[in-house]
Image 1 (cartoon, rainbow, N blue to C red):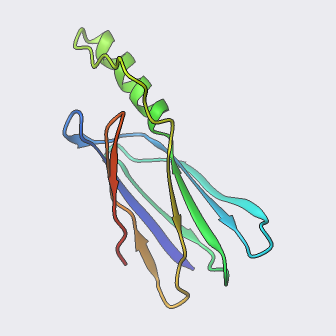
Image 2: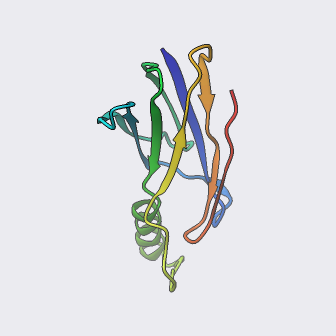
Length: 123
């Protein structure tokens, strides 16, 4: 088993991307795709899930950023502190990984805004 974790940061407000939806898919060498998990990040924008390791497979993390920013905008409008987004926004952030069988952990931090993101991977 390999632990996949992430810490998602909202660069618009300079804080954690609380409660963002994150899914993980596995695509094997025969192009069979299966969902491994679908979770909601903690209030601190963190996820941590165990996945199986499969040889010659690709792992895909999908972060639902449009849904997250839409909910942030709705919350801000309720508080009369609008984060009005007037340009096109990213729908989702997709990160594809090949995991090593000797790894026990893969950490994928992300800093995001409605139009851009930065991602890196560490063991």
